[in-house]
Amino acid sequence: MTLMEEGHTNPLEAIDADTLRRLELRAESHSRSIQSEAAVILTSVLESDEAPIDDSAWEMFRKLREQFGTVDEFEIPPREGSPARAAVFFE
Image 1 (tube, one colour):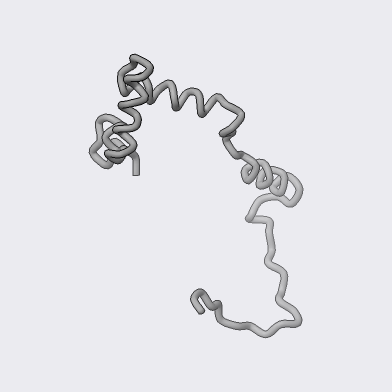
Image 2: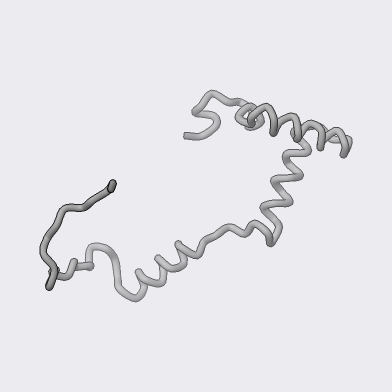
């Protein structure tokens, strides 16, 4: 669910009070509005090498699909050597 679907018109409304207060103090120390400070923080994080977008799973999926084809072409091999058993989710 998006922030707009939750009834927030401003993304900062979704931030808890402690974090918002810290953001407010940081904004004041940089002589910025809270919105401007949030924009600077988000931009720097998204552009930094410290927080790259992890697309390794997608890249792996793409390579597997190139090598083995689509799901429609996939056949589940028969189970051999082990009896059928029920899945245990909680022990």
